Amino acid sequence: MNQLLKKPAVDLTDLAIGIVVLGIVVSVGATILINVRDTNTENTTAYNLADDAATGIAEYGNWFKIIVIVGVAAVVLSLIFMAFGRGGGTGTSGTMY
Image (cartoon, rainbow, N blue to C red):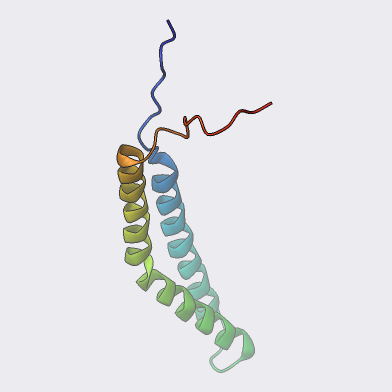
């Protein structure tokens, strides 16, 4: 008699690590860009580029909550599909050689 091995429901470590790394990169990047901007004189090319980049990262930070919500929604949908979906294609529609 073969014992069936059950798959784990969902592995959340990839999602959690991705969110943490994303938060660290955004916060460190914003700090570096603000420091670069503040070390240059105003209205120079370097100042304007660093200021535009810092503004862009700040806009990305505004979307961070939505990114987390989409990630959690993907986990919930995968749990629903695993619970109510087919059992991994165990049908007898054809034979493989």
